[in-house]
Length: 241
Image (cartoon, rainbow, N blue to C red; front, top):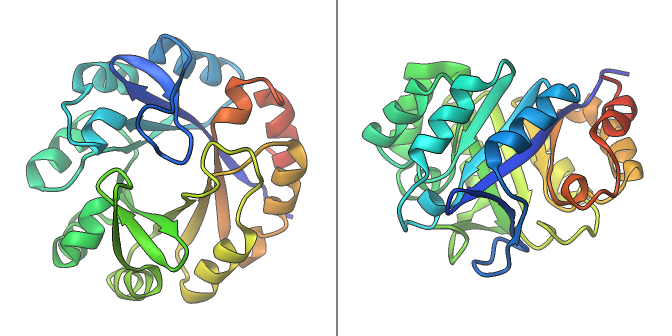
């Protein structure tokens, strides 16, 4: 079976590595220096990290200097998310040298712009689908967006290469991934799907690996790593890396 690509998460807020529960501001657990966290995952065998500027996502400033330092220091591939909503913020993100920029809110508010940047930048653009039920969550998950299926259809037709799918209810909850949602997204697109939210134990990764033939290419792991439910080398072994 094809392997499952793992992306340890480094979420940055106020200059610190944190993990939120269901994306709710104020629910964070703080885990210290984000560069140290990123380097730890690299040293333990990660080929990617999922790097998020939470302050930019919530529209309350940014951690641009720290994000740029992490991206420049890493020898692995970086998927960068958080507050990328227009040409200026996109160019800043791409200039860090990250491998892929993950577009969230902008995909909901300005799909025509997303179609254009997909045409311009190809597989360096990923589209984040933060899902609550059948709807997308926007602006740091504090309000509701449109139907996720409509967004997948439109941006698949535009050539989107990767959708990063987060079940908001599962994020940071250690309750297991939303397999039904992931399968539904895979059924609507030929793009790669990266799963995010809820991964709590190695068995969750075993189940996700079984979805690789359907189109689930990777999985973002955050809280479970930081609280020590399993180690990254253990996770990589299960994922077939």
